[in-house]
Length: 175
Image (tube, rainbow, N blue to C red; front, side, top):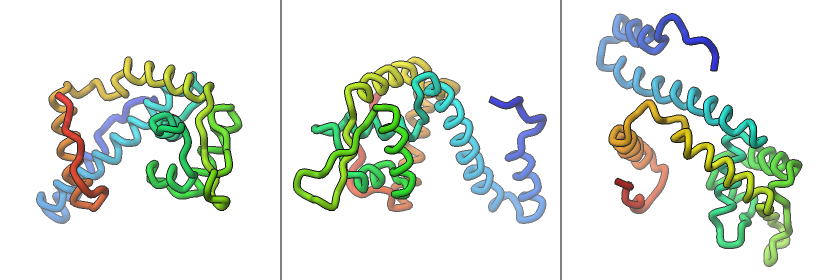
């Protein structure tokens, strides 16, 4: 993690925004930029936790998605859809995981046009070890107590639902 900044850039931006456009537009700007900055911080911390496993967080997510399937495999297109990334990114993720021996590409049994990414035993092992480390580190989110984590998840679900991120009911929150 780089050295802390001397000032809070979001607080400073909010001050300027308030001076120019007033407090109402400044509030959502500060909220959005705060979420984006926290995402950058968390991704850097998660990648640091995963580095010893030879993974990045996107590669870890791909391994976990594959490990959750019945067959341990998904078509590349479906993998990209569930990871919510462009097909080029899926190709890069799968290329690196395949190079490391964590997945293999296999032809689809019934659709000759499709290729599956299939998790290997080594991929399952590294995903399990990485999950142990992430769980032990509370996914780099221990700055917030459990109740606040639940509230944040619920608030962000509201934003995601309003944006059409998913349909149907979300599973009940733990706790």
